[in-house]
Figure (spheres, rainbow, N blue to C red):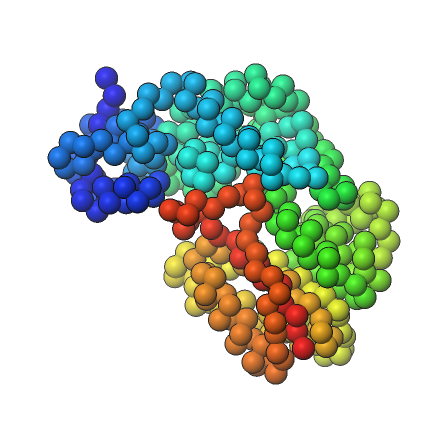
Length: 386
């Protein structure tokens, strides 16, 4: 018999608006065990759908369907096939992409990234953790991969009472593998790289930014050099700044892999080095700012906005007349309106006029569920600065 969870009016309204999450404060009764798939009902007994139940997280319910359906193996396979169908259309000219993006694919708390013939899996809730074995079996049966790796080392699992884990679930650790994006080759390590091995969400923004690259280019927070490599094909020279020596080492190897010799890799703090470049009166034709998330919670928003303003202000001062600034925030808590306000304020303080020529978001293999703002986190703006 399917376990049942009852929610109050507020929770029911969220479900009817097709938001995938219901918080613990909106549950009035729960006859269910953590990690189980449950039937969700309103106060009158009307069924709102099926959801994964968590006994510990404040996000107590994660909807997998807003209908009263059976959720056997064929149900999950159909969701995977639907996700695959979208990627077949949008993941162009790349061997690495996000196959499943959690709530946006109505597979909440499940991430599956494909890197060539290997897959990386994240099961970030009690419910998806219980289904992990099934997902591995399904990936093996459908794609015959060399390896399936789990990167369940994300802090969010602690809110679910789950351990932080990483390792091979099928096959063995492939070590360093090569992927290709827009004709550029990268080396990635699925167990040691950031996130699931690489930042796939900026893929389309790198391609867009490369169209404006020429002359002297500057790539800040370069990590393993992805934007710098795209700039280098069209620019005379590129400076790439990254604080992590290990990431820069791999970036240098990626440049060699692509036979690009016009990139200077600089290890250091971006905030400090931008000031040094300004004092040296350096000028660039294009600058990329792709910092880590400055605001990981609501309490950090004010400090984050100050940080975003400082780096964008300094970048604008370093641009030649008519230069292009590619600038991003991956902080969900920093809204698009806030970010554009920061850019306008930075331009005013830099005494520069800025035209927005592109407003972008995460790549299309990270689709945004319009009923769930939480799935929209990456904002990327391309400005022409006079």
